[in-house]
Image 1: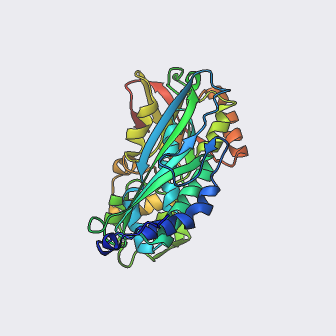
Image 2: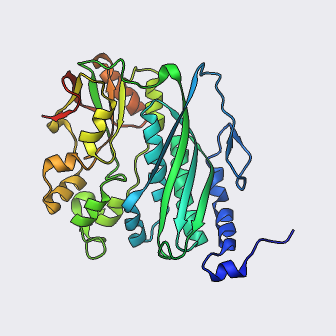
Length: 345
């Protein structure tokens, strides 16, 4: 069969052979993510997955999609592309986890001005690492070379995941009650939200990118690029032993927007401000940007990437179980009667 190649298309800025090279380079990374249920390999028109529902009398599929946002600008500046894929996976799988679902498959979408196979492979290596951390399979994706739409040295990255949960185990906050404890699961940094404000505060295209910050134990740029924490495995393990009444993935909108999303009407979240272990990075952002505390908690995760609501009687047990799975957790508040919302006290 004649190999696919178009000199005319290449002259217009799209080199389809670069796409084939990128696929070859990423195959080993994709192979790391294979789990039982995956059918076929790369190159088909769709990713196939055989769903095992033996332990799910009433299986429900849960889907989530997201991107990395303007954090990608930092990857461009540092010319480091092998971690933003972790962010992409994390933003999706942490969301479906908030419903009680186990992520099963993931697909990515990379749109770029020029397909540089080594760069695309580096991006996919991060996606694969995120999938390994989440226990899901990278079953497909798309790389679109779009000259004239994106600059040659820039790209966008988005992803999509599908998970499953038995209908009886969906986290629907129906069992949440006043007196439940709110546990904080520490973040790894800014994660993938608020970077438009971060870039406004710091001169990342100038002197601040490689500025050494003692409280961060290194340079500012790499600290900001730290990938988003993936909470899937330890939290799913916890759910086997503890009745989790609610999960909030703390993303854009911070505490004030995300925590109420897991609350039923008639209940409110009381967060003890002194209990929140705010990361030094957020103190730096607030100080140098002269940002009020209310705005900080309404924009960033402030060092808390996920919040779990558990019965008070199980709070200590939950902390111990999470610790045994390598995930730190601590109580930062409780559920109280009142209008749905968050009170920082």
